[in-house]
Length: 301
View 1 (tube, rainbow, N blue to C red):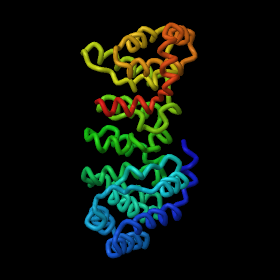
View 2: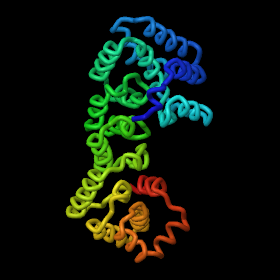
View 3: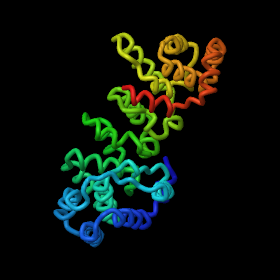
View 4: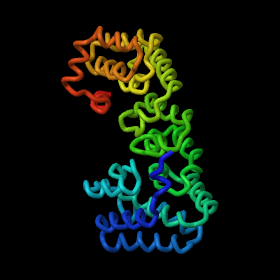
């Protein structure tokens, strides 16, 4: 669990988001959002909470937020791993309104938040799930986050899984493993999931190897990113699988196999690296990383 979340300064978060919005909206639009925020802080009734959340894009539009490098640093300083640089302006505006009810009691906030989730359309749901890492009482939002992971709408799933520190910081291993497995299933890139190395676990590695077997049996391609969480757990039982990856004629799969083997401390992995020393040298010389492999695979997919 992240210590950064526990130390979150709500006032600083609110004022920073207001500042970012003021820089991007015309005076009338910003004033409307700011007035609504102040009304919510002051205890506005439920109808205003729900209607104002839905109505944000009428005032903000839906342009990309495009934070400056300084603003990106501000975000990370407020909450480590928070990545609003991938958001749109309306998503930031909706998050500000959520934070307008964040100072209410725990039960009241969680009740209103759940009602907003239940009534949300797809665009609203994306904004809601993206906001999880900066909302109060994050430990109580795990079931809601799991609902997002189970969504059959890829954009909603991605809002939870990608560029979001919440899963790695708060989900248990079973829920975390489902995030990674589903990302592969729907074709979402693993390199955009925060905390992959930190949350590696043997159960996930076994699940991924089994998934690779299913794909191969069906004559389907296996993402080279799959081997990233498997790497630390490669042993005698999985070397044949890695040999299969190395034998793939496409360099990206060979590179993934080498990186995966390099993460293992087993003798079997070390021996396989020795047998493929020329590939190891090529990967090291080119300074190939998992991020490189993820970006390249995403472009070709």
